[in-house]
Amino acid sequence: MTDNSSRIVLARLRAINWDDDSAASDHAHSRALLMREYLRRAALWARAYDAESSWPFFDIAEHVDTAITTPTDIADELEEFLEDLAPASLRTTCRGAVRWAALREAGSDLLTDLPDPYEPLLAMYERGGGYYLEEYLDLNGVMIPLRDLESNASEAPFLTLAPAALDALDAEKT
Image (cartoon, rainbow, N blue to C red; front, side):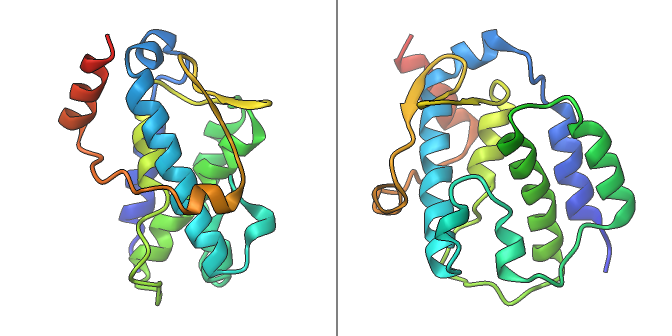
């Protein structure tokens, strides 16, 4: 097994400007939609793998296949990178996204009718960094209620993660 997918996700995480409040503000609308889509997808995976108590910010791959691990060199680089990121749930999702890539690359027997859980979250991070979790999810430009697993699982899917479509949505709101 190669580790290209995990390395690509780590490179994406490293390329993010986590302190870019301007980008977060410029992309507030799309970031909110992307976070909602992550919450919906994570809720579906949590239900499918009896991980409801771990939802919303968790390592989904851990519940799908405990034998899959992130390659050691990538895990070490990831931990060094994550040292200064907050909150803890953000670090958990970054670890989860890298491990998810390893799971996909291993060709693990995933539920094929469920969408990739981390891609909306990675796209949200790339459009302005992370979030803060308090009473609401603060996306550095917009606040959205977290709500519960069932209400997130029943949300209509957000079908495009294409940057051009997301940019168009943000342009509508400015």
